[in-house]
Length: 209
Image 1: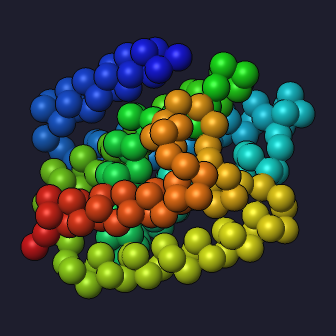
Image 2: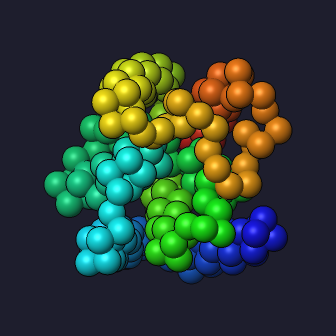
C-alpha cells in the first residue's frame, strides 16, 4: 500500500514539474486548475450519491485540505484574492503531506483514493501557480492565517461532537499509513499542529516579500 502510494505521488509530482517547466502562461494553468477542481468534486460526490455510499461522517469536505480545495474553487470563479495567503499556506504543506502520507486503507473505495490524490495534486498546482506569479506572503499573513485556522478548528471540534465524526482527526488518529502510526494517542494531535505551524513558516520563507 505504502509503495503504491509513493509511486502514484511520484508520478503526480513529475506531472507538476512538467507543468512548471512548460507553462509560461499562468492563465492556462488557472483554467486547468478550475477544470480539475470541478471534475474532482463532481466525480466524487456524484459517485457517492448515485451509489448511496455518501456518509456525512467522513465525506463532507471538512478536512483541512478538502476545505481549502473547495475554497480555492470559489475564489478562482469569483476572482477574489483576499484569502489567497490562507489558501497558499494551507495548500503547499497540505499537498506535500498528502503525497507523503495516506489516511486511506485497502478497504476504502477507489473513488476515495482518486479524490485524495487529485485533491492534493490540485493544492500543489495552486501553490505552483502562485509561485510562478511571484505571489508573496508577509508575516501578518502567517499570523492571520494561523488565527483563522485556529478558529476553524474550534468549529470543526464542535461539528465532530455533534456528528460523532473525526474531521481534522481531532478525536482519534487517522487510519492508513501515515506519521501518526508511530505517535502515541496522547500527543499525535499536538504533533500534527506543530508540523502545520512549521509548514506555515517554511511556506512563508519560500514566498516571503
